[in-house]
Amino acid sequence: MESESSGELCGLTEEIRRANLIQYYRRHLEQLDRAIDDPSLAAALSTVQDVTPQKRRQLLFAHKQYVLIMLGLFIGITRRSELLGTLRVLSRNPVFREYWERTGQQRMDLPEESLEARIGRAVDATMAEPWRPVRRTPPAPAMSASP
Image (cartoon, rainbow, N blue to C red; front, side, top):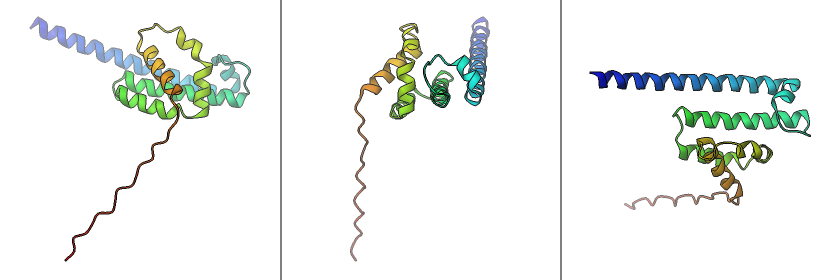
């Protein structure tokens, strides 16, 4: 019986941790929304220098996209393979590429084995891949049976 209540406690602890994580990211996303809407707040939130207010908003939006994608992984609604596929597509966007290049130092400061650092290295590798659009050959028309 003690083992059963210990398991319930672990499950409850994990549920609370996930709820806190969601709340944290919700607040972070709200801050990003405010910064995107207000250039004076964007300047306070962004670490990117020497860009126009419009470019800063674009870079903050690219960051917001990255945060949303990572949140999906953290809370378990996205699998790692889906996350990498989404980031592979997003990495072809010029604004996201610029965001990624300008924020590389921040990722270098992450603990090497953290999930975010590992994902960051995967995105770095994706950025280095040449872009080759997949061309799918349409299936041949079905042959109908002759009477």
